[in-house]
Length: 216
DNA sequence: AAGCGGATCGTCT
DNA sequence: GACGATCCGCTTG
Image 1: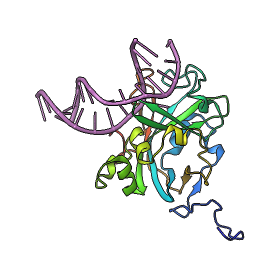
Image 2: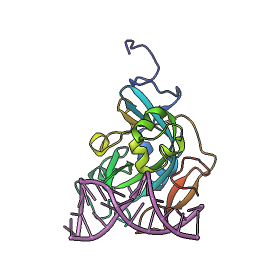
Image 3: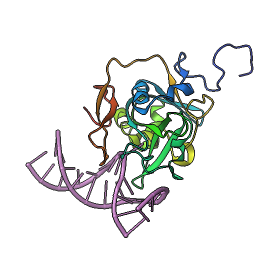
Image 4: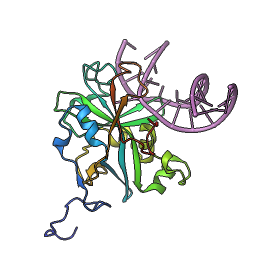
């Protein structure tokens, strides 16, 4: 902090996992299904009151643009979904069912509205805080972040707080990082909870993870 | 173990 | 005015 000659990472919050590096903008440039696969095994880092909450992504879904009836971008740009039409690597947070938030990472270049829904994490640090935010006992880690609404609650992600934030900014309170972990296998299934294009295989999971929103 | 309904409100028709 | 990229608790088997 006080030194400028230190060659170590310059961002303000040293990562709990020392060798992790923030994801760069070009990571989010490819099509949503490519990014959804690539995000499996990556870290989400959330800074809350100086505490570092982290989790490893174990489940994602790809949503496309004007050609995907299940996507929020399908009907074109609106006030709600405008982040999707902007530059890649930004958080699109929406409010659903009057009660829950869901976190997406925008991808593809500006003007193309692809995104990846983050559906489940393996919690790695800050589990006590996550449990408090979830209002559940800390003794059930597999219930903390095993669903898109749960993980937003566990990380205190809301639309007001996080929509539009830059997920490549390591000085921000929410960003993505790579600690070198690579999933041994990846499984693909249809997306969950949608009525249109319900058979399209665009859900990606690390098989047999205990932290999926649903088992395979 | 699986299925059902209630909660609850921003967004778009 | 209807619905939804969800979650939880209760019921049934």
